[in-house]
Length: 148
Image 1 (cartoon, helix red, strand yellow):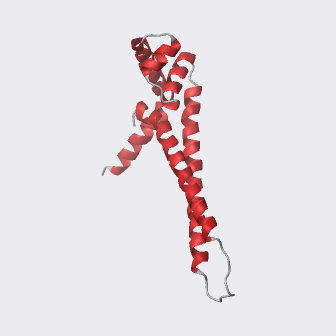
Image 2 (cartoon, one colour; image 1 turned 30 degrees about the vertical axis):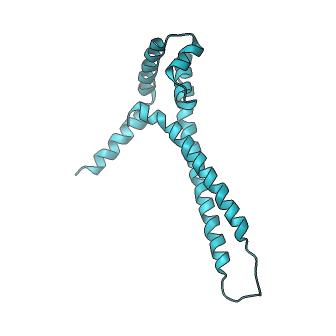
Image 3 (cartoon, helix red, strand yellow; image 1 turned 45 degrees about the vertical axis):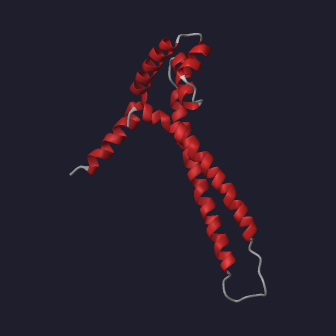
C-alpha cells in the first residue's frame, strides 16, 4: 500500500462510520417497533423475540465495526499529528482529515498552489520515511505469504 492510499483510509473510515451509524439508528428503530411483548403466555418461542434478538446482534456487531473504524482512523491521524514539521502536519491534516483541495489550502496559508503541491510531496515523503514501515512492509509481507 502506498502512502496516499494509507492516508486516504481516514476518508474511507469516515464514510464507513457514518454509514454504520445510520444503519445502527435504523436497526434500533426497527427493534423498538418489534419489541419483545409476550402475548397469551405461549410455551413456544415467539418469532418476534427471535427477530428482536437478531436485530440486537446486528446492532452489536455494527457498533464493534464502528469502534474499530474509529480506532484505525485515530491511529492514522495521530501519526500525522506527530510529524516534526508543523507546516507539513497542517497540509496533510487539511488534505486527508478535512478533505480540502490544494487551491483552498494555498489560499488559506498564503502560498501558491504550486508551492503547496511541492510542500505536500515533501510531507508525503517525510511521512513515509517516518511511518512507511508500518503499512508498506505489512502489505508486502501479506503478498509474500500468498505466493508459493
